[in-house]
Image 1 (cartoon, rainbow, N blue to C red):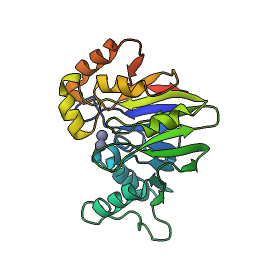
Image 2: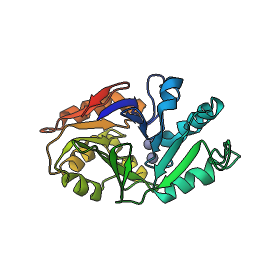
Image 3: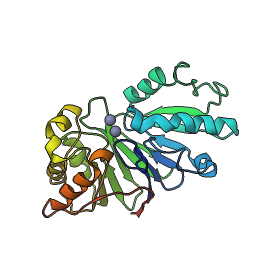
Image 4: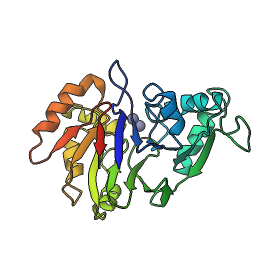
Length: 253
Ligand SMILES: [Zn+2]
Ligand SMILES: [Zn+2]
């Protein structure tokens, strides 16, 4: 599995982009940074977009991806997510007020955005990948994601506070090769992290210890304002090898 980091931060500033990963050539996991990073040719290869939740930093570029695709008669793409997440996107974004409803454009029969619901803890198949969503603990319904290509599995936490079920599920994967986990704030902002249902380095260390397998831990969703402090604190956590992912990094698993 080839994972290219298109965006990996919990906010946007110059040189910081919100969350988005390109998996192989045609699958995107979260849409926080697609259209400002991929060339038009690369964008037209995207056929599947998995959304963990409807927060703008995870879905916004699906709007522009649809617009880019339709204007050159592209094939468009399918958005996958929990039913409640897809309904948030449809109701609050693709409502003709914020953005045109691309689930009806250019026609209802062949729209540029298709939607496919996936329940938490069900597994669907997307382009040779087994994709399992699992509800995590955020301020809105959000799912972590486990991807399994038959040889290797990886788990993405999505935005979450302390949670258990996804780590139980990941621990059962004999072929688990990597964990991608969010970490938004430094340790001194623990109260804010609890309120906003995110993690600090201390909390990340506690989460990682819930996984019964010793695999590399890639950290993402760090708030740009606290980037240096969070990276420093991650390094100080003894006995754990945690690495903050970087923009444009390609991780082969
Ligand atoms: Zn969020
Ligand atoms: Zn976020």
